[in-house]
Amino acid sequence: MTSPDTEYASLNEFYRVAWDQLGRGVADAKHPARTPTLATISANGFPTQRTVVLRAADRLASQVEIHTDSLTPKVEELRENNKAALHVWIRKSMLQLRLGVCFDVLTGLEVADRWNAVPPTSRISYGTQPVPGKAITGPFDYEKPAEQARFAVLKGHVQQIEVLYLGTKHQRALYKRIDDWSGQWISP
Amino acid sequence: MTSPDTEYASLNEFYRVAWDQLGRGVADAKHPARTPTLATISANGFPTQRTVVLRAADRLASQVEIHTDSLTPKVEELRENNKAALHVWIRKSMLQLRLGVCFDVLTGLEVADRWNAVPPTSRISYGTQPVPGKAITGPFDYEKPAEQARFAVLKGHVQQIEVLYLGTKHQRALYKRIDDWSGQWISP
Image (cartoon, chains in turn cyan, purple):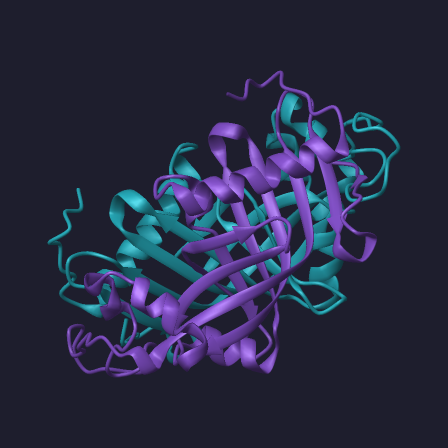
């Protein structure tokens, strides 16, 4: 457990804590890291954000994974500009995680194994008609068939992670792939 | 209270619900809308996100307000590109709010009234030395003096609001300033 008096002694420990939290999000549907906020950049120049579900977090490969319908605006935005961000605020641990991430969009045979692992009741998240974001006349003028061809895996290559701990004494550090994740304390 | 079977009958009602939630965030420190995620766009082309505190939400003026240290990277980013976004996920109400917002950065005499209303114990959020985000040697090599000259108000002019309700039957609508907030149901 984290108390407000917790202090993180080393950059390495602080980095491990960040990935531990992401790992817990993947494993535990109730953990705040399960549902990060994904930011992308839209064609009109505004950042756009939405809650997503974190499906995988691999510290050694510095990769994360999200599943989505391939026809959603966020996929269109990532195909245009793959620079994105993930944000998690874990109130209980007083930790904010900010990730800069480049996403690849994978579909079709490449992700057939993941599709097979999606529970049938969850497959209706992939295939909404009309396509998500399109205008409809009444609020319920849509259907949710399951459609494997619309299943996409967003594979994220983490470029940097910033960790902020809001204990009694704040701590903040920035880790970059380009520095092999060695990390740097920064002013909070 | 919201039950999963709640249905929002009209675009007007759904819009009012969204602003009601923002208003509750301003009034209630424990409401999820108190701490939206603010996304801006950084100089290196990545969106960046952080939790902020919502200080005001004015439906009639379509404005929101956030307070910050004027020397933080987010202010630098907003001065370069004022297109930003706010995101709130309210689990209890199963509502996601997504706002596209253009921010003005106000400082000095213009915001002296707001500074005077900031409790003395909270004023240390404005003035950290070194400037937030700058490299420091050890994790605690910083100080937090209160500095009125660094107090900034981010005044947000809301351009659009998208509301998503994840009840038994999903509902989603998009409201734009340019359409005088009349709104449009969209596929969820």
